[in-house]
Length: 115
Length: 111
Image: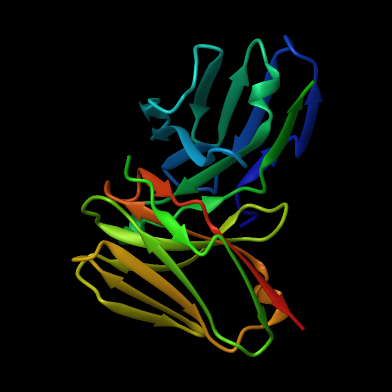
């Protein structure tokens, strides 16, 4: 398995622009998580899905952030409009429930810079 | 918040020495997990210890859990330069769905 795939790996954009981050979870995993990592706040859970349904989005910072999972193999995190304080590394992770193992598998992350 | 706190924030040792990192948390958990993050990479799961376990081993890793003190420690024995990374504890109070990560310990192992 290729692991969790994220694109793009790096994104530089200007304030006010729309940003879309993409994630392909590990095949067969039924949970998908979006995290944000910054020096100031560490690693924060933004939202997670189970079987493509958003379960908890209490970590989404503002209405400017939205996430979707149209099918089991694809999810997007969108920021519109973007602001400089959104600059961070965004990670997607997935987990499978078969076998009862709760560990999460992380993608390589998308480093977002908003100028 | 259930965020774990890690101690020390940074640790520098020589190759061959042991490295110990500590994690404290605030409320009851199902399990506690340790992850490693190499610079510029995603997190990689290392080891999990359940709330009813006190000690667990995996290769050169040894994890302990003291639920009465709400603390855990990760010991890396006979460290190698390749162990240089940041190490995070993650508390799990919702069966793997709501991991709360600590701030991490940055470990540097000098050759």
